Length: 518
Image 1 (cartoon, helix red, strand yellow):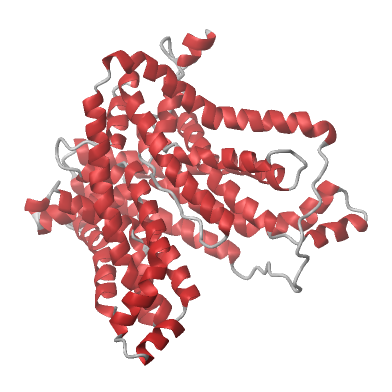
Image 2 (cartoon, rainbow, N blue to C red):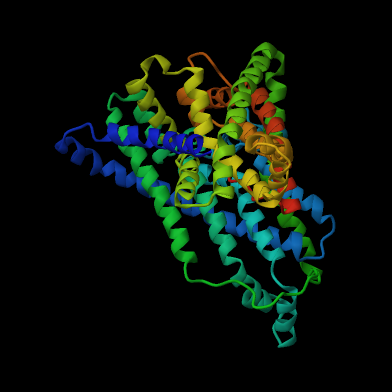
């Protein structure tokens, strides 16, 4: 297990190493001029403003949703929870497409309601699109934290004279800090690495600057430095989250009360609660669906069904092998970490997460530099594209596999070996059949994430090889809203499998929720 696991870890260092080498190719004077450009400071400010806005909007939406679906006396909480998570089926660039598609004379707001809305773009357009797509991540973290609070603590606070809101802020709110930090980290890293939304909204953040510098400028060294700056910014976010959580204790001192908290009667606030839920669902689900239906109707007469079918098949043709290879490569890493824990196995496991932690556009650009320098014949080939997919999403397979291996243990394999079976034979006959479900779950998750992936596909796909995500982005960026609608709708329907997988993990409590980055 050690050799293949170390091979996976070493492969993770390839893109980062070549990106670093490409950045330091220039002389000292050129490097100083690249690093201290005034534009870099403006890009940093724009990226931080966008991230701060999205995090603030996420908290304002996700916290009330978590409380209403868990603590209030509203009916149909299961359906409400499903609707709160459903926006994850809509990729961020599709949400941006929907917002752009509602404005102007031909937008659905004017066609359906007679309202000619101005075009929402720039900072506020990007923040709106990203918020409507990412708030489920914050919601799931906060809801899980609320479910873990001992209801006896709330009742004790109420018996000591606290009001319901006073008990919430005194007892429950402190227990939500870890979930708020974790959700903020997930959302913040997604915003930092997003490319599709900021590009469609014409907002000059780091990711869009990296792409424009690479695609339209001859100075690729500056593009490498921008990628390194973006990677450094993501590491700052990870360090900040760890620093805030350090030396804080949230554990119980007792076993707690194994029952649900008494639902809070909303009373006169019930109408306001339903109005809030209606606005959130209308904006996050109704808006993209109305936009897709409107533009789908306009583009249906001229729809090229052969092109739609070809894009779907090409998406599946790359996502399928990449998902299978990700599971195969993740298995030895998970086995090494679960069965033979050591500093070396821990290092290998951390390296496996490196590809997923890197911003996707910076990762794709690093793969471009690597192939052009080490293997020019493989540039824009299927081999490099699938290799990049595997490195980027392999970490998603480790959680289900590792948790399953911990639960299976080693006693059954030991019994099989005592009966004469070899080590590999015992693993294949006893343990591997029990890993089918976690392997399938991890592979399906990688498959759906690749279907929604845009930056890596856009930079590394062979010339003329277009997937669903590339068709949505290319047509929307050119203002061809009707032509993009069928591809966007197909992608949304396909991505709903991802939402079903999230709900399955969240409901069963057997796995960790994955982090999205399409």
